[in-house]
Length: 279
Image (cartoon, rainbow, N blue to C red; front, top):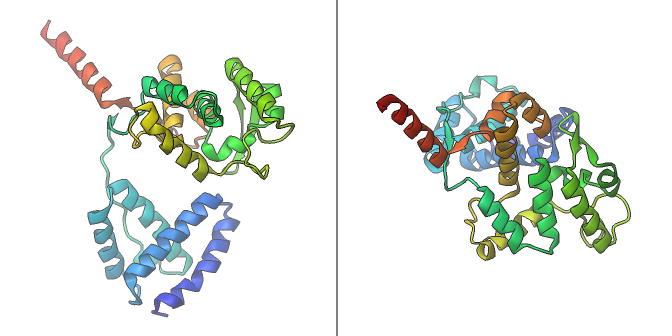
């Protein structure tokens, strides 16, 4: 089989395989999107190692290395599924960065401006809930009326179960919001049809808030709130194992990314080293 439409027929089976592996719906959608992107590039040409390498080079020109590796990982998974292990390619080598680019890092002051700009709204409570617990935006549905009353939520995500404690000040804020919104049971943050809020709606609302809060839109997304929680927690506890457990990470190497300093903080530390060496 060498046509684009021919390989598209495999996507249904590939999707079923991913579901059997209990991949999240978000991951499945991404893998399918990435494979379709390659099939569009192939334009009906027979799949070969040379074609995959050409695609890899094309991606390298257009996207950041991390994005390229993410797309190649999905494509390699598909190639293994259809029995073309021989066409799998190596991911790009990325030198580990020791600090976060300042244009992407959300600071505590910027977070406070976001909360203030959204004051009195549902979005304000959502922002404080994510940043106060480190919860994923896809896990917000586990913040239920019952969980708020208990002061903790049991989250089932990525084949793992973990307990997320809700700090007392955040509990008070959530109880006030629950009373105002009239939610009696189940997820606290719901749409008009009483379904848990969609992550895309939250993302759009956060982006719309940027101008009023005077914060760059590049920094404002639910995931950056999670990063801010992780950096703040680590600055207090210095316990990366406990932080990994709080964030629901299987690998501490993933958690390390969340605890990186900003470029400014990195420079300050280097300057301290220089002072010690010269005094």
